[in-house]
Image 1: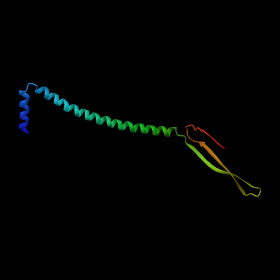
Image 2: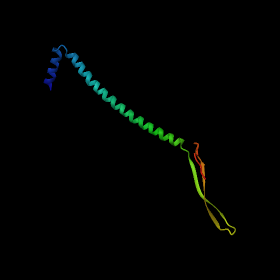
Image 3: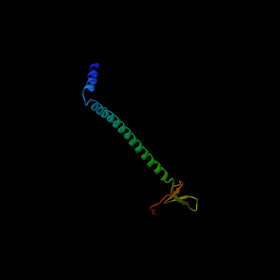
Image 4: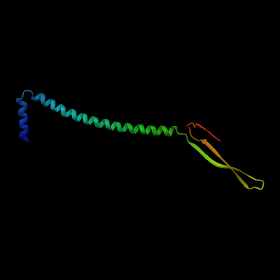
Length: 109
């Protein structure tokens, strides 16, 4: 290994273009390392940005989603003797208990 370093330093001292070539090769190595690091940082930033976008979407859905209370029951009555008579009607009670508005697009009877 020492022999190779000795040849390298002899080449640097005796070759007229050697210092420029050495600087250029060092610049290539440094540029490759910096580019690799920047690619890693960019990838990490992309992953974190995607995670933030998903979390923001979920928070928006949770904030805009109305909180409703739905109650279904059969309507019925009593006859003259006190017996319970059930009819075939179902009553639906829908109450908005949240802050977000509730829009009913279609209501049929």
